[in-house]
Length: 119
Image 1: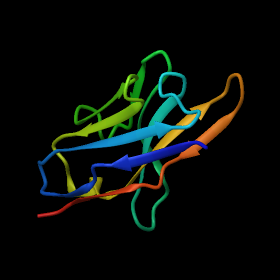
Image 2: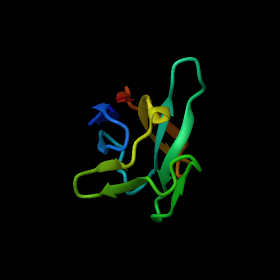
Image 3: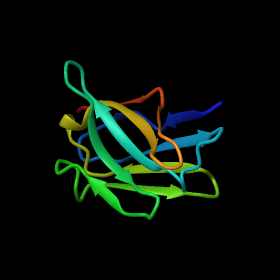
């Protein structure tokens, strides 16, 4: 049984910070998968926020570059998204994602955690 469980969302004022966590279990090992954070606002498509590859390279959406940082702790089998200087437009449900192409193809999603940035 594979599982991704997000936590750390909540309500924060503009300019504030949050750190999201994604705990992986089952056959998902964050060191072997490309791990990503996606977000989806009401009425909008889900978009990639950031990801980190097996080799440790990272990618960020232009809208979050310089403000968000993705990282992983292999010992804890957990991926994090540190979010700083939050803006109202960051408000969305944030989803953890795990993807692998070798030796098999697999894509997994967490249940999501709500982030609300509001005065």
